[in-house]
Image 1 (cartoon, rainbow, N blue to C red):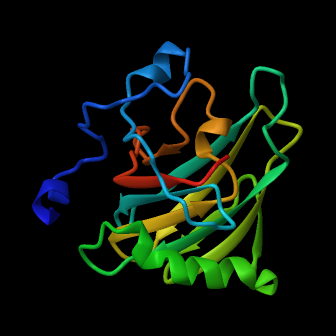
Image 2 (image 1 turned 180 degrees about the horizontal axis):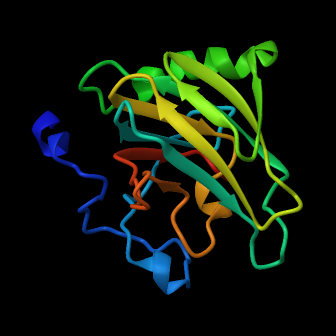
Image 3 (image 1 turned 90 degrees about the horizontal axis):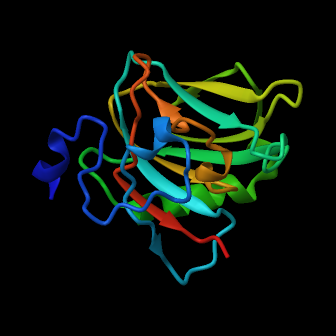
Length: 182
């Protein structure tokens, strides 16, 4: 399994792609792996693993929807660096649970903020209500796989383009994902 992800280069090649209801042509061409739906209860709606490189700045974005409003005013996000070669979202769940439960450890971040990724970090993202788009810069301390645990499905905030991009504007696709949304 490790070899199948070694040259991933940011895009899924899964045949079971679902367009998740996107009607924008600019976004409809990228692939998502169909989320696995667990029967476990978690504080987050979505978890996904991304391969990130140290020295690269990634952009996590949230856009207003068709109604002109964001799906929510903000979003909680816990990011956990995974052990080398790990593609198992469950490997980081214990750390994510600790981060989620300790409300005093949340770092507040507004649109434009840079989030330094290392170990396990909990962020409370606040979207810019005066703009159609909120952006958060992600800077991983080390190259490797990072598991993201989000309060809302990231696709709720996509409009015309993918929610995660590298510094060259290319989509950064999830390697593995799991949804606990109702």
